[in-house]
Image 1: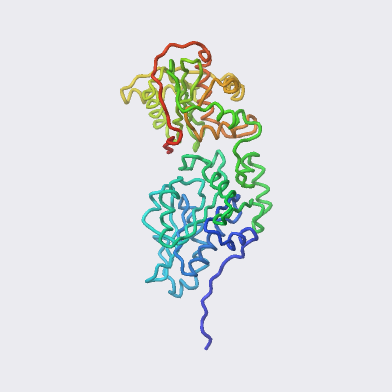
Image 2: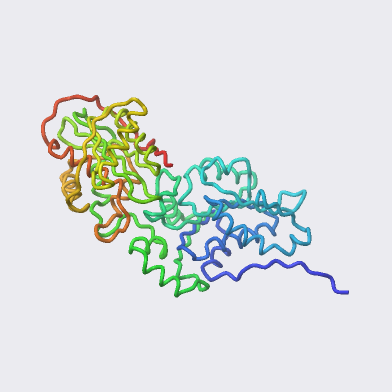
Length: 431
């Protein structure tokens, strides 16, 4: 009688996946396009490490992303699981060898706290660009201390449309980690970059079809997996913004809250606060843009108005007629607040409205007080006539500065005391 043999079934990796599997680096960072096979390679690495006796923890931002990994791992180990060699728990997404620390676990990690309370010898953070930086720095790294473990970071450069899901303070934090890893000479880090086209198992016809529906920028980010710091044709450059950045502003004589609500689900409402100083220069002092309901963004606008002791809220009439004013006034009545509001009408296109504001930046008359990563990313990646997304943060900034434009570079009388902001402590609550 022939003895039954247990088998583990793993997909055949393509060459780029194989390079990641073969690397002995303690820290690996993978920048890859959509459907390029990055989650599959994570599952292969996880299964191999588990079979070697390791304790593996895989994390991704959402349940759907975790489900893809979990399915691949279960499929690979189904034979020994069915034979009761390994124990599977669907509730906790674990596969383990009982009475040992040998285990695979898959968890969501949309914020750092969901990852706490565990340890690992192999930690895999998938879709890392959407996670808070603290998921690694405060929670993930200490998990590896017991066994001097290894970590793998996997990400796709976030486009404007996908970044609304992010919990990161800085939308480029994964790209900055990749860039720093490229400069490592110790051998501790290894970097990998491959596009969707590098996956030989992908349906090329479907890939060609979907790329026809994408902007050139989204194609470069999500298919070719390029980290784009700024787009050719964008109205602003990072150099222009950085050269005019300050850590404090002078006394302000007028403060405006610009608001630009989204016209579609899943997009943010732009809320940008700007002021003009006694030196006649304009200052961007805060960005409170958020993804929320009309009630939520109206409350955020009023909070910004009162916190900054603003003179006026400025919003566009084109979107839903007087909807913006009505929503804000309704929220003000409910909370027993008062505010000054001004409707503005967009008689010209976004790029034409923005050009005078860009000119003020070029003449070094507009300054960012601290850093505003999401606003600035939109400023340097939105290309008029090409980008399909609505630049709500830019629109809010333009409305605010346009209202102040006649006062910029004019003598002013002191009204508000100066404020100082530490660049390193900039933080944004994203809904």
